[in-house]
Amino acid sequence: MCKFDNLKTTFQDSIFTWGYFTDFDKVKLNVAKVNVELNILNSLIGKDDIENQFILLIEQYPNIRMALPLLIATRKIKLQNTPIILDVDKLIAENKSHIFYDAINEDIKKDLLIFFKESGLKDIFQNSYIKNLVDYCFGVEVGLDSNGRKNRTGILMENIVSDYLGKFCKTHQNFSFIEQATQRSIKDNFDCNIKIDKSGRRFDFALHNSDNNKLHLIEVNYYGSGGSKLKATAGEYQALNDFIKSQGLDFIWITDGKGWLTALNPLEETFNHNDHVINLNMLKNNALKNICI
Image (tube, rainbow, N blue to C red):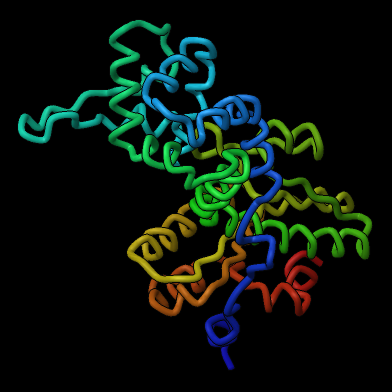
């Protein structure tokens, strides 16, 4: 079996752990930021004359407005980039994010009341569909956190590779590594000068052999599904390989995921072009030792 066959037939079905699905530490932190405001808003639940009570509460505690976007499962930044249509007949959209943060005036109170009614929150409060806003927002934050799963995929892959690098360095004590390696941190840790191809370049890992001062720069990623991006990604890592190799350094690309099965041709081109393209199975089976020692 040729080496590329070994790569393409041993992609991981998954790298996901139970912790991938929800970052509860982040959820708890976000809810804690508005805990006081949510508890004040709890006093509105089931109230008569709800519209007047809503405005009176805002006049007394204007900071409670900062918690209102979360009640409709959105963020401040999203509202800043989402103009709102108040009149469907005119189709005029206006940015209304300021009503949650600017000093209270009559226009803002009017807009807040429109928000309260048209968002559906008035009905929710008036009819006590929610018993406790802190508990409710905990659930909302869990839902919003699902948007972060794409970013956590990269973190999971980095964590797996970091674990293997740690074990490798423990066994071969002339090796050490750093994560999120920059030009500066590589110089500070290994006294190696490198050129970078773009401002702010960070390598996922830099692995250094103190016996011969050899530096290996490592990038990792995981693609569970296919897409047009994969072809471009493969090409980018060819160019990065050439740039690093021209400095007398070593580049290792660790990539995995069944998404690559939809883009085998560009991956094979990069595999044949670069010195080191491996997956997690190859990493597990001592690829680092074969490459670095």
